[in-house]
Image (tube, rainbow, N blue to C red; front, top):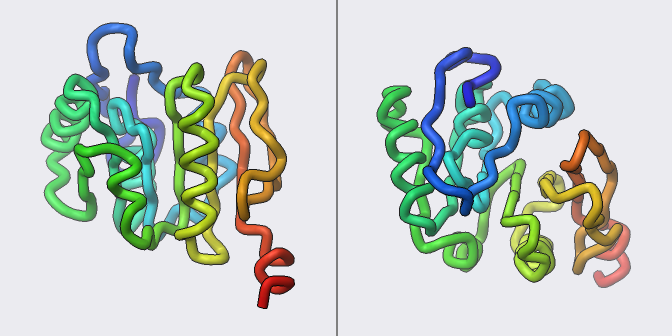
Length: 186
């Protein structure tokens, strides 16, 4: 696994040992960041269920202003910290080692949120996406990686899916706050 583009291009990344963490493939990360394009420059980015931190590190490499990494698995946390150290990244990030729920207890000021819980943890998708709908800024973008054979709903809480990209066994669902719902409530 490597950084695809930007400041840290082609730098190799450590991944957690074992089968508990399923890294986002280089090809899928490239697709994701091609879609995000210039929106990543200067963005506040959250990498939830971060694993090795590859997605958040790619965001930093491509010019994100700040990245939150949320992960609680010890092997994954060790990989994130090792990757940050190897890339000599000393600022512009925070690691929440108590997991996603802890990070979401505060108002998350992210412009872009990426989440990639274990594919078989369907309840994590629902819980996290519904919580994000309550704490995000109106123009924030949420991207959930999931198995293409296990589609996510078009709506979850206040979030509405705006785009679906499938690539092999993986899919990316893009969500934004449904502002028509917010206007109707006021």
